[in-house]
Length: 406
Image (cartoon, rainbow, N blue to C red; front, side, top):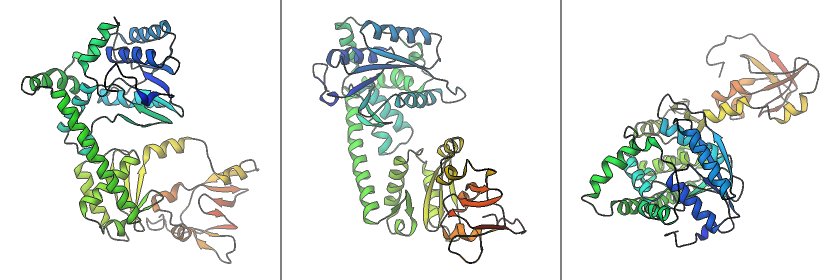
């Protein structure tokens, strides 16, 4: 979509979910979509409860949609206000919006060309690479659906003109004038000064973002090609020996591509150097690099990528295992965890082995072993998660050294 005169062919046949804030941009987009796709549209408003006017904005959005016979729901967000409110609000908002998407649903947001210019400058000031400087993509996968920005090639001035031509009403967010927020500072203090020297600065910056997006696509294609040709990937793990056959800049490119696919927080330059150092660690070491909730570990010539947020959510959920389902209804059923010095006899084996050796032979990393579930009935071990059925378990008294516990 290059102008409001065009019908956006991308949205043909799609189920449209509009993120409606009540501001001029989203109200204009609501009007445009309602004109062209009246039977495909519903709206979602997220109430962040950050302003004394939040409930009024919520009421405005619900009333506006009711007036035009558009389904609209409100989602209340409970934000962490201790630090970086902007970023926390954005993450919570998109998490909430993504939960509303089903297959073939498209979330539309009202980001425009001026927003794109601001985003590029903010990323530049952070020292971002091509991924950051490509700013906001026109479309990308989100949840079960897709996130699409129909107005990304439209100037703010055209949005204002559209609102005036159609006599639209909207709400004004009082925080938009607070230059303590970095985006507002760029919009209100920096870009106006740049415009006095550089004409059409928003178009120029948006064009630069497009160039960076194309460069990013090239580097991603190179990463995919390297991974395939070098046979680097197994179960989302990277082979260290094969990775080291490449030049450092291509290794970093592969790591950034893989981390992005895993939805990990992008590492800083310092963290990236630590990851490169991890590649050269001794073979008998199990080093790790950690930043935030994310970890990279090396074990048996492979890099493991660990998202502790995901692990916490999985651990907090219900037990989901074939052995659990099989034994849970039997009398005196229990779930236990590994103890130092355990020995077990596996099916088709004539002698007992140390559980430590069994786990090593199965290629289970040391940091995962303490959390493996062991399923007991009447105090007899029946099966071990990721290992299989057991015939017998023997507890031996041994010193609980660090070596034995791994």
